[in-house]
Image (cartoon, rainbow, N blue to C red):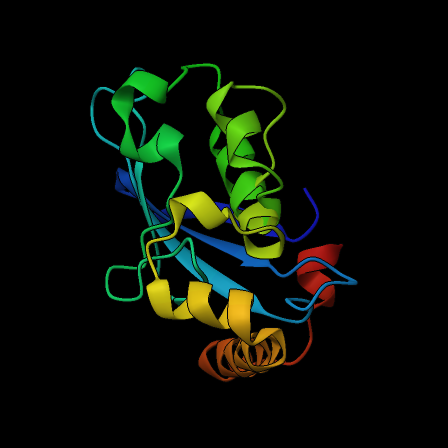
Length: 164
C-alpha cells in the first residue's frame, strides 16, 4: 500500500512491530512521515493490537501524551473484527474518513484517513480540536510544524521510497 510500511522490530520477536505512514498527497499532512509502534499479543487476531504513534502528530484523535490513536476498533475489544488486517488499520489511521464507517467494519482506511478527516466527536486532544474548530489557520500551521518535525526525526526529505 502506498505510503505505508510495517515490519517486526527484531527478527526474534514477532509480537512487536514498527510501522511508518506517510501523510497523504494533496493534503495538509503531505510530506510527513509518522512512525508507529504495534504490539500484538498471543490472542491476536481475536483481539486488536496495541498501537501508538512514536512520532506523535498534533491531532484531535491522537492522545498528545501516549500517542494512541482514538479508534473504537482498537480501544473497544467489542468493536474488533478478526477480519481487519494491520494494513486496514494503518490505512485507516492514514486516511480516517469516518469513524462510523470504521466501527461498522466496512472498508477501512484508518491511520492516513484519521489524519485527514478527524472525528470531532471522538477527540482526545482538546487543544487540537479547539484549534481545528476555532482557528483552522493555526491548526494547519501546527500540522505543517508536525510534518517538518517528522522529517527531522526521520532524517530525510526524500519520500519516494514510501510512495513506490
